[in-house]
Image 1 (tube, rainbow, N blue to C red):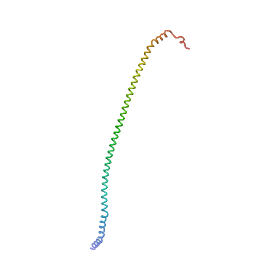
Image 2 (image 1 turned 60 degrees about the vertical axis):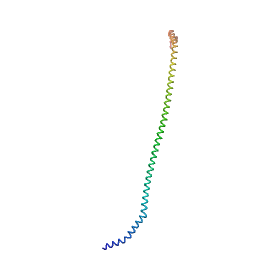
Image 3 (image 1 turned 90 degrees about the vertical axis):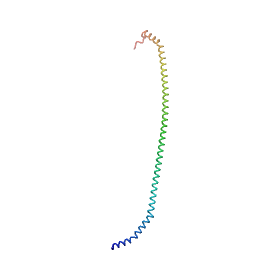
Image 4 (image 1 turned 45 degrees about the vertical axis):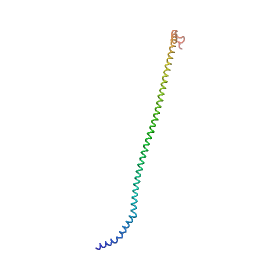
Length: 154
């Protein structure tokens, strides 16, 4: 029984300490934990808001990047089309010049053939005109005999 009595006294002596601890806990909860919990809740809300805003900005940036890439593709396609038109124009001009040169060269070849044919006809006429004279000269030379003084070699 004495133990119970000692326990009772010990309990009575610890009551003021328990009350002080409970008061200290209530004070800390009111002065410290409540503002911290409120700040943490506010911080969490701000973080979630910032995340949502960042996601929106990221989505907008992605849309702008897609629009930029589309515009870039269109610009490249336009440039390639313009280059193709310019290249085709140059090729057409080159083909036209080559055809003109071929035509001119073919005309020159035809003119040269005509000139050669005319020169051949003139040469043939000249040979036919000189043929009787040459035949007569050859016949005279053969009929006259060897040339005097030309037969001996020293």
